[in-house]
Image (cartoon, rainbow, N blue to C red; front, side, top):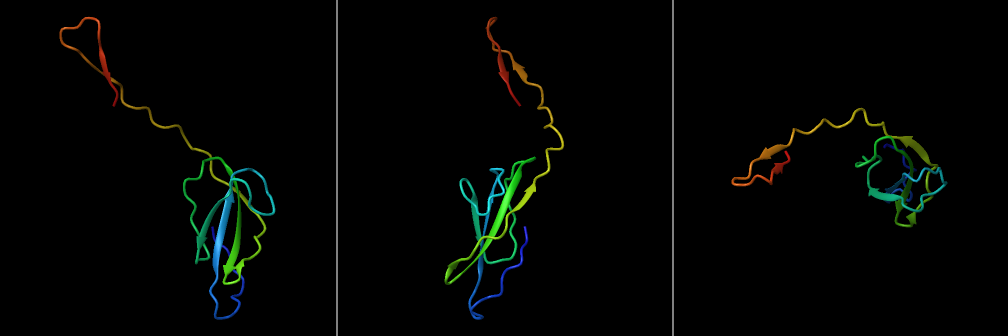
Length: 109
């Protein structure tokens, strides 16, 4: 995700950003509920561990010495759905237990 920050004020100050995202399915004006947060000094961030086929709402706010600014308008986007099912595992292996006619041990791969 990439964004354009506001002009730095005061000119000698530094600006960081807080990114919030939620999969609650609402396009609320500000983050709430189960939103997750990430702080960064950059104008971009990578989000990991997102769920395939899920819609997310994202917001960003600038932070300086005076505190957190207003949240951006929400951005809604969706991750791609899974493209295929996982491959099947190898077949289980039967292990014969010596001197037993009534037991069988199965070892999974």
